[in-house]
Length: 157
Image (cartoon, rainbow, N blue to C red; front, side):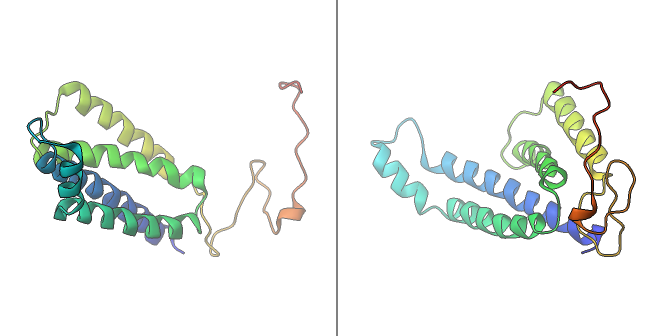
């Protein structure tokens, strides 16, 4: 799987997940209020709300796409991309739901996005067209070809 396709799948999953959050938030705001007579009536109305159903569907599709991602990429590479969801939810919450976007929230979101961009430069995914290197720079042919590195003396066991 090429890097472009893998990143596309990751971003699709993240976008679906963020969309689910916005839909669930919107549906919950429509169904739960301080003046509702009972929690059970509110929950019954929420479960049938189109935004809640749409949010749950987005979660389901996000999970299916994410499983495809994890079949091809190291979890330590793919998982940090989920942080993009923070940015997407913050922007959509501000734009769609009218939630406040403070300077602090904007700066924090930018820091998260910058960290994900740094991690995106790593090659931690399966691609038959790329050589896989271990931390010592040796080409790996098979897992059994790798010999454990000797401790450098800095770490005591």
